[in-house]
Length: 338
Image (tube, rainbow, N blue to C red):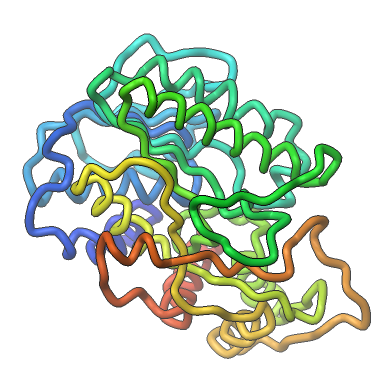
């Protein structure tokens, strides 16, 4: 079979499904993905398709995004009961009710969400509209962000958040996520089942060629120009997590009917410079450092998210940064060929 984006995503996702002997979605029949075009949304869709096949699930999936990117990627997949809807969730409510809603709308790339004037509305108005489509006994998973901790120097735990001024370059994104978390806590108090995911630096197959997140940008520079030119000296500290591992954690949290806030992040730290070296070694690209720093506005020096609460839910060996990067390089090689 000729390898395309859909077959790549589904094949890579089999690693996720291997962690489940029982159906983790047994309570849910009607599922909505809001924001199905991005890294998280596409991988959720791939996970659901593979779960359908493994457990012969009788579920329906509705995918909502502002464009038909996901529909075009999955157009050759012969799966029934998967519908794609082009809609801006900040402007319109859906007239259906769902058992399970994944809300992963919006940009994750700082260069994109800083520019987008609607960023503030996505996790506020958009999320509020999404709640109208949730059945009373259903579940909603809201993808917040580790950007919530911007302004903190330590204690990146679920009971804390940072302090971001309203004129900060990232304020629309961060304060939108904070609004979404507050709204979700209110829904929990009203008796709804809501899971809030503070996701930190997920990567893997799914993003397009215009994605400017550091890891993806480095890979594209390495493949297209054979050189990774860095914006700064690369001393910032990060914890990356492979998207397949994110999906495993999400399904385990669902299976155990968890609610409230959970950090999802990698379990080992790396610097941006070390990340660039890993990509350089796996693409045979040169690496050049700048004479002065020109980093993205508001980028934190350290993103060291706590992993303790999540480890109590499920323990397994996460994909190493080196192995995950190799898979992501394969994804971008595929995109560049098409």
